Length: 130
Image (cartoon, rainbow, N blue to C red):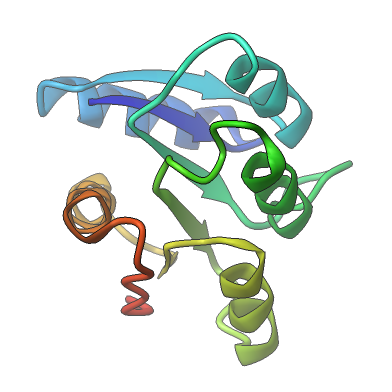
């Protein structure tokens, strides 16, 4: 799979990119929602991993804008966050997340979520992993 990782924390993006590479996937990183949107206008991805809390454009807005792109409905999106509030969870799901994974989590958990999303897409597979 070719996976886009969107997170403003470089260490997190690098860790996930490395782990996904070890699992046989390719990964590209974006440090903001705006950068992700720019990449999505020129490249196709098999899945997106998106942080819910980023400066300038949070995960909810990024989700809404990704889903509004011509190919934005076809890509599974896994959102990760440390915020376990029910209100944020509802916002993320309403904005188009396929599932929400809560920090701390390991890259293999996220890969499993991506694979499950791809099997059941376009239906939401929210399992709210803690």
